[in-house]
Structure formats: C-alpha cells, structure tokens
Length: 125
Image (cartoon, rainbow, N blue to C red; front, top):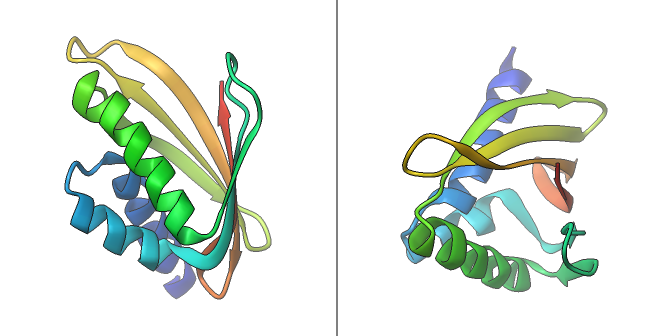
C-alpha cells in the first residue's frame, strides 16, 4: 500500500508539473519528479518527433507548452487514470476548454528509476 501512495503522489505531481502557471512551482516539481538525466519524447500528430534530454530542457519544454495551452488557450489538464507495470507507468489525461469540451487527449509512458522519471514518452491520442 505504501508504494501505491508514492505512485499516487508522483502522478499527482507530474500532472501538476504540466498544469501550474507558477514557473517556480513548475521548476520544483520538475526537479522532484524527473531525474537530472531524464529524456522526454513526443511525436505530435502534426509535428515531427522531438526529444528533450535533461531536466532543464524538459522544464523549458513544459514551460513552453504551458504558456501556449494553459495560459494562452486557457485549457485545463484533467487526470483520467494510471496503471503501473514494473517501474513503468501509463498516465492518461485530457485537456478541456472553458466550456468543458475535451480538446486534447493523451497518455504518457513514464519509466521510473529510484522513484523518478528517467524516460517520458508522450502520445497525443
């Protein structure tokens, strides 16, 4: 049960990392959930595959996404679930506009080591 609570907290912090508009809190959360040498991979439907290496580059990427989608477009991230399998998490989420309509759905596969993310694969679905 102790491990479940740790995973619940990690997932909560992970979602908040993408959701908070406070850059200082975001920075603290990135440092809390990602290892320093973490890698982030995304293949957006209309873009080319992208990789960010290191927690600083991941922080910059999350900040750019936050600026565009949360602050400018006023989308809210809603956590929809997670499951765990041998130090890998599948986290599902969606983003809603001010009218409550779902405009983006996604999932992440998070590979963990020592309770921190070492690889983050984001999928827009």
